[in-house]
Each structure stands twice: as C-alpha cells, then as structure tokens.
Amino acid sequence: MVKKIQPLLEESPKDMDRKGLIEELFKTYYSPLVKLVYRMLKNVEVSEDIVQDVFIKVWNNRQNLDETKSIKSYLYRSAINTTLNHIEKNKRSVQVTKIDSNLVSYSGNQTEEKVNFKELEKKVSAAIDTLPPKCKVIFVMSRYDELSYKEIADTLELSVKTVENQIGKALSIMREQLKGSL
Amino acid sequence: MGGSKILPVIDIIIREMEESKDWENIAKHLKGKPTEEERDKLLHWLNEDPENESKLQDAERLWNLAKLPDDDINPNVENAWQKFSSVISEDDSEEAGFFSSILFKIAASVILVLGIGYFLINNPFKDQLITIQTSAIETKEIQLPDGSIIWLNKNSKITYSDEFNVEDRLVNLSGEAFFEVKKADGKRFTILSNNAKTEVLGTQFNVRAYDGEPEVQVTVVKGKVSFSPKNDAETVYLESGDKGLLEKNNTLTKTITENNNETAWKTKKLSFNNTQLTKVFSTLEGYFGTDIFVNNGNILHCKFTGTFDNPDLNQIIEILSISVDIKYKKQGKTYYFSGKGCK
Image (cartoon, rainbow over all chains, first blue to last red; front, side, top):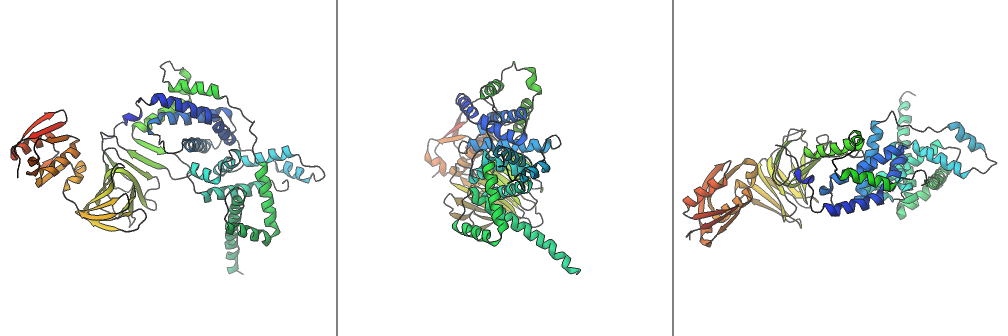
C-alpha cells in the first residue's frame, strides 16, 4: 500500500540551478547559524555538524521546498530545533555553566571601583548559559541576531506573545542570578 | 487560623502570574511594539512600587550587556562548503569515515523517512506534525489514532498533530480524501482544506479540495456533516446524498450528489443509471485518467446503464459501444468513438 515517494529523490533538470542556490544559501547562512548553535552548545565541532545536517536536509528535500516560504526561517528553525533536540538527548553530557555566586556578590561589593564592563559582560553571558534552552534560544536570537520579536515568532512558529513572555522570563531569571552586580 | 492557610498559596500563584506579566511588559518595552495603552500601563506600573523601577533598570542593563560578542568563534565557510558539496555530489568514492558520521546517519534517516511516506516536522516548541502524502500514482489508507480511517486519493496530503485526539481531532487536507470517522466521546472531527471547514462527530464522507480546482466539494455517504468557510460566516448541514460546494470567494451551496461515482476512487465501483454519455465519458476520464473523443456530437446524447465493480476500462468501453451501437478506436490512452449516435 505504502509506496516510496520517488520524485522526491530523483534528480530534476532544475538540479543545476538548485546547486547554485544551495551554494549561495550555504555561504550566506552557514556562519551565522554555526554561531547561533555554538551559543547554545558551546562545542564548535557539534555546532558545525548540526548546521551541515541542516543543509543536507534542505538538499534532500529540495524538490519539496516551498519556494513561497522564507528559506531563511526554515534554516533557522531547522537549526534551532535540531539543537534543542540535541540538548534534550544529551541532557547529561551538556555542561551547564553555573554561576559562581561568591564571585558575583564579591564584584558587587566593589563599590569603590568602577566595575569592569568586560567582566560584567562575561557574567551576563554566563547567566544566559544557565537559561532553559527554549528561553535561551529566543533571548539569544533577539540579542545576537538582532531579530525582531515578530521575526523570531515567525521563524519558530510561535506567537509574538510567547516570544515576549520568554524574553521576560529570561530577563527575570538573569536578574535573579546577577543580583547585586547589575 | 486553619482556613486562612489556603490564602497565601493562592496569593503566591497570583503574584507569580502578575510577575510574569510584568516581565512580559518589560520585554515588550525593550524591543517590541508597545501600544500607547501599554506604554501608559508601564508608566503607571513604574509609579506603583520603587522595586518596579529597579526591575526595569536592571532589565535595560541586561539587555545592553547581552549584546553578544561575535569573535568567540569564526567558522571556516570555505572548508565547510567543500565538505558539504562532496557529500551532495553523491560520489561513490566517499570516505569510509562519512558512513559512520552523524551526517550519514541523518542523511540516511531522512531518506528512510521520506521512503515510507511519513515526514515528521520536528518542532519541540509545538506539537509534532505528522504528514502523509501520496504521489500521482498511488492512494493510501491511513488509520488515525482514534480509529478513524482516511483513504487518501492521488496527489493529496494530510497533516495532523501528535496531539490528535487529546483535546480535539483536527486534520489538514489538501487534495482529496474519503473519511470514515469514528465517534469519540462527543469530540468533533474537523477537517481544514483550503478555505473550508468540515466538522462531524462520526460519519462517512468525501472531501475534495485540490489547489487547482475552483471549489471545495464535500459529498456525504452516511451521517451528518457541518460544512462552512473557515471564517464560519455561514454553515450548511449535509446528510447522506448531499453535496456541499464552497467557492474561493466563500460562496457556499448545498446540492444533491448527482451520482455515487464521485467516491468511486475509493469504493472501486462505477455505476451508471440511464446516464447521458457526456457524463459517462467525463466520469471515465476522471477515474481512469484517459481521454475520450467523439466524431459526432449526437453520440453524447445516448444513455447508458451498467454497474462495474473493480472497473476495467477496456471492458466498460466494449460493453458501452455494443449497447449504444457505436464503434471505437484506441490509441495509447485515448479512445475515439464514431457512429450515428442518438437524438
């Protein structure tokens, strides 16, 4: 009854154009995608593998791609979902950076000195790493890739309200983490 | 004293809900597009409590500090592209290492997934969507988690969530499908297709909603079906033998099913009852994907009666040409009829 959907895997005459298209996509989005995934996983090799896989999926699905929809959104969504699934699968092995609370309150007490901006930036970055993965990816997208809430919502197929809610959650968790040093 | 213990818990819940709402508003303020009203609310909220002002200030600081440095990692795009293009060129001389890599496993699993016709859109944010589709040369029978059965005609696709039957039963259809819906604790079964919404509790009916066609058609075999445009502007109720039509401009019409050959793709049964050959030919063209020509318009006025299980085109043509006394010639998938015809 169930047959193989052959046309999806056949080479079509359009394949030559598609090779050009995928090269353009790859060269445009490979680097930003790797950076985003790396921000989540902190592992260069795995991040590069995941993004390679995303492009392979696009390539294998090339006959099926809906050209009316944004391929950029598709790439981001695919990369993020793969990343979140990866985190879910490797829960035990992913290193969660815990903030050293002593360090935080110590620098918080250095009232006389001007707090080193770079250092604070590092702490904020460490606080981001402690966010729950979905919350983190939304926060990172809004800051790192300078995407609007609307763009993030469209990419992840969420409502704008959910995005705002998650950003709010990220801010409140981070504020709690960094109490005294802000 | 005893009863008052409950209150603080509720207080905490309410406080947490309000907290989360506050932070949502802060988030909106930082980057979103707050409306005038929301801005006023925020100002009001700031004046309520000095703690609120400190929250907003901290949020703003965090926001600016979190502008992440770019130079942490610098991927080599050219190397990555070389690697990628060697994978997609499907060269036989792949390195052995490739087969054990994640890439190969993923590529293989993608092919496998497509091979069995199921494509899971894996989005951890949402319900997983299950999509089943047919090519131009196949039909499929699908059993849903609630026991309902869908026969999917050619070039068609259905999508449903893995949460199907948890709270509701919702299916997206493009193309044509025959539904045999089981009753399930009063849970409605809803089909969205193009601009149409079809709702039932339990029954048998056909939905035809191919993108290229001007209307969505629902034909009911058994039971009662509610049929409306997605915007619910109006609704018709269809029963056995009824047919609903919804045009692209949301014009809704209820008519009767002219013949039961509309679901023949599923029942594998064609029947004609004193039917004009115009209709017979268009049914045969649709069912068998053949082309039929006549050399004389009068042929189309002739009438034909006959019922065919598991119909065979050559057999039907043979019987038909004898019964109305016309001749035919077959060329590939095309039939040419000639003769006097009927008045």
